[in-house]
Image (cartoon, rainbow, N blue to C red; front, side, top):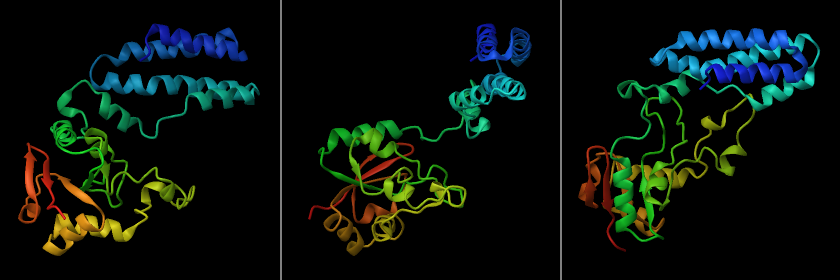
Length: 242
């Protein structure tokens, strides 16, 4: 991300902010030394993620001590720290076997199959709501079912919905801890994938207009819906017509 050119850029930013050429040169020298020590392995990736923010943080601290508050605010506003450096590095590490995968292999294929074999107005039901199944709360920043299929989804990815954000409280309750607003719809959706019956499958289709089920390799719905597509990670079922 930053090499020698990036270090020179830091020097220019700090010098331009009124920190003085000596300060800019010192911070740039630190950045160049760290970049040279990073290498190209996974540790090098971490250095490339951390380095720009470390250099800017040190520069901001030193500028702060010189009394230029507005400059510090501008620098930090333009270079906000990522929420988790470890999370960023997990997605850019060059070793494919160590790279974190939030979207399973085969997801794009399944989504594109559904797009081809469905109508634009069709509604899809899915039980794939959370990025991490093992978290105590559902991180609902999950959008790839609707993204890959280009179809409306009954329940998916409510993290950024207005009904979610309006119930979050800064420093008290994170939007990631806010459940889906329509509890009845969520329950009607999810029960079909856990304990399907002719009645609840019919209700999903008739009351909510769902025509497709998009899930992982979940076979329990096969008694009440027709399997239309399956690969190593994903299954697509067609619900009975009304």
